[in-house]
Each structure stands twice: as structure tokens, then as C-alpha cells.
Amino acid sequence: CYTGLLTGRETEQILQDTALGILSVFGSWREYGAAYLFGALYWSYPDSSKAEASEYFIDLFHLIQGFLAEGGEWSRNPWIEGLTDPEE
Image (cartoon, rainbow, N blue to C red):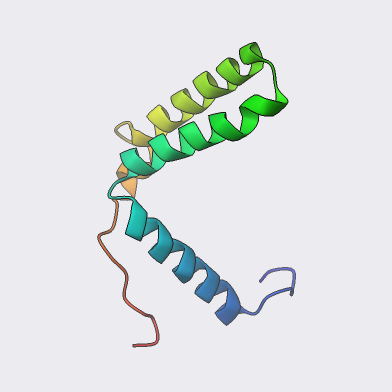
């Protein structure tokens, strides 16, 4: 949107569709974080050594712990149960 490649409405629609997809699969930031963590490990491992993948996993684990901790980004922004269409 800021580069002019998408309109504001197109950007809002992409974000809305993404959020609805996430909400249909995950029920909390903890679930989302665990899936992200294991997905990142899965996709990074074939292209890196075991040690590099382990270090990456540990770094992501600590990052996600920080998001979930009191005062962390995900604790300050509670998980939502659903979305409404902004056009309605």
C-alpha cells in the first residue's frame, strides 16, 4: 500500500483474509507461536546444518517466549475470537 503496488482496500482485504485463515486454525498466540516455531525449524533444517538449525530454533523459542511473557507484544494484544467484515 505504501509503495503504491496495492490500494488501501486491497491491503485491508489481504490482511482480513490472512487473519480469518489464522483464526480458523489457531486458538491462541501460544498455538500460533508453536506452529510458527516448528514450521520455521522444518523449513530451515534442509538448508542448514543441525547445529545451525538448533541455534535458529532456540533463538525463535526465546523470541516467542518474549512475545508471550507479561508485557510482551502478544500479552499486550490479546488473541481475538473472530472478525467482522469491515464492510458490514
